[in-house]
Image 1: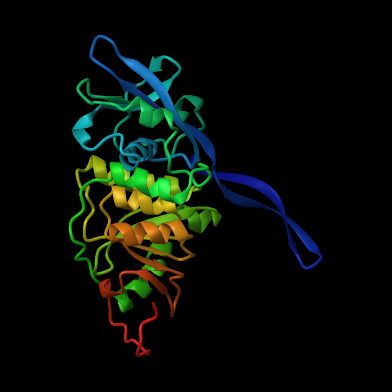
Image 2 (image 1 turned 90 degrees about the vertical axis):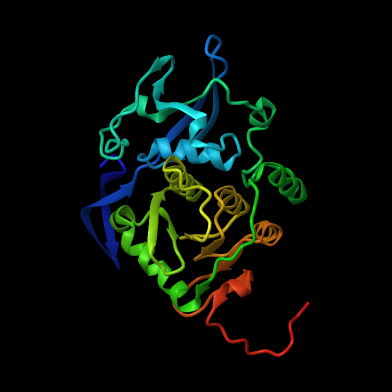
Length: 303
């Protein structure tokens, strides 16, 4: 598969080495281009380049545009496919998403053609999107910017039991086929309250994995993803909480730690947030009422 690369290595155990092979997760750049404007005066703009694991490239591009507030409905997209410079290539059949093909540079550029009537804020795009961890603006500005583009929220009624919550990491791991081969990919899973896996994606970048998942659900007209929980195989950053918010997700759980700004997003927009989800423990950073089956062992709540 194009998402996995076999290489020769020396495996050392103690002081003895053995020549063998190892499977690595492929990492390649993906450029996302945007086509926009009236029918007779179309423009093309390169809006982002991300390092990703090939496969589900169209979903990744669409998910990026959704979570950055550029598009809001599947009808905003008129055409979707691979492009190289000025040569337009129509998308392949649905089963061919570039995941099992030999390396082809032309498959490292995806162009999303917007419908002619879609209004586009070039000022927003020219800011290079505020949602990168190294954007250099303060947390307050990030939250204000997010508030201006996030879709309408309804009351969060999602609830999940602690017992089901504990079972999610192993269910996600079982579904990670490429991780099981390489050990080098982030995985994200979308679950319902009963712990059933709705969707799963992998990538060398955790933000790319989330974009692939949300993009795929968006193209199936499943967004907003209310009454679902997003499980992250790593940590929870501001960027990932922002993507969950834009996808309408009710709860985020991470195997690793959340950042301070991620917690602020969860509290401001009422997204239940769990971190350090392991075999027998987890931390609730927001939304205790959304997790059933927990018995408090202290009488007073700290302020």
